[in-house]
Length: 84
Length: 306
Image 1: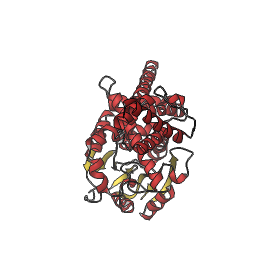
Image 2 (image 1 turned 180 degrees about the vertical axis):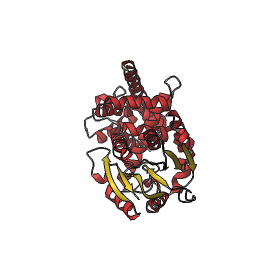
Image 3 (image 1 turned 120 degrees about the vertical axis):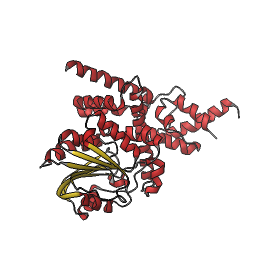
Image 4 (image 1 turned 135 degrees about the horizontal axis):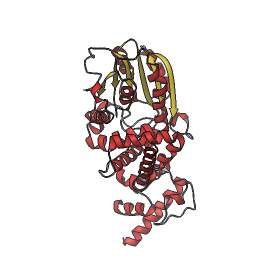
């Protein structure tokens, strides 16, 4: 699979998870999306999101990755790196 | 004094800035707790961070902030597990002893620094500490000469007892050498270590101490043991007749090493009474609102008499 195709697939799958976790069916996320743009994205929502992403992608994030993550761009990079 | 206050404010601002850049999703609690508990709380927290974790230059603040985020993350992951399964992940000491208590990286990097800061940053923990300071320590009459802290954790309740009662001597018991190391460092930082000694081991298998205590603390230990009823009977036996104790437990609270599930403060109170303790005062605090009580982490503390 081409890298851009993989990136797009990850972005779409992650977006679906975001929509379910935040209960916003029209939410659109990009590399530039930051937490303040989603007011519900606090520490509790963050862990819900992480667990849902781990389940959806079949991966496990480390503590360092989860605690230092600051925006969706970081998240996409990690998903790209970890996706089996 | 004004200069000291200004310095505390500057350090607190820097800590929250570091938390914001290093652990963005675990940073808002610093300012939220300051708003809830005020400037005295802020100054105490700053003093504590500087004494225990050192300076920014030697990465002490970063270690504290990352430790707190890791501890919170571990807590939240296990709370999710509890919400989904209605039970804690582990149920036996052998499940957690090697994995956690004997794991230096787990204990020293996240668990102990994080738990220590949670006593200030988590409102329900700080309120329980306040209850101990205002409702328990001032009501120990006559003042105890000897106290035991069974399951010292980070040593914060031993530290409070030693600082509040200048004549008291203490003995701390714990199964983890890392808890002993962290507590030793903490008591040294507050200059109260000379009145304290440590016993490393499992209270279920060790010999009864030669001397019974006037006062005993066991802070959020009950949920870490397989048989809390027997544990409470042991504690009861270690205290002099009419001696006092402050015993607390975490309720419906997932954490990596919680193995016994308490479902209500009343359940803890009943177990205390069955073990022979008379409850003088009780106090419970919930971690947050918005979830059913049976899924909301809580802590309950009981001031008891033998």
